[in-house]
Length: 239
Image (cartoon, rainbow, N blue to C red):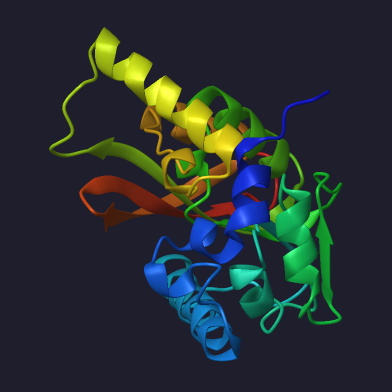
């Protein structure tokens, strides 16, 4: 029997909390009002991204299809669907996608398979930080492969953190044991929501290798875990 992916475990127990780690979005507290507040955060985030496209690139996507990587329960996908004629939300977790489908607008397609594209806008926020870097860079490349000429990208990546001591061997063992217990016993999902740091040289190399030569970085800081939004546009022709 195949072991479930951690994100399938998180989604089956506490899907909204898995996207935004806040007690107000725990499974025990999610009601109609909490859902409205949750999805409103997506509207605000996408409004910010669109304003950054205007400020940093002098244009924003309005036509074609958008891809939301790691769409979860549709927090950003719903908002993108207000700005684009067609959107595809991709997530590895079937349970996340199932929740997202409950209120999805008609121009939003949700899937657990990376769609073929081409895409005029590729977006991802607070997603890659939860994916081990080797796996994440591969996923990023697969998605950027599907970018249309002149496509826009808004992708947030984490790179370093403050005030976190390195784990010694005993601490790593305890961490592994804690993860195993929480997976098996149905305990709170908090430890399963792991954070990762990327080498920004690898990230930039991935973007430029896929024809994104105009990039602007906007710093992010989530509880002293630092990274950046990468606001970028693909060349319309080969350089």
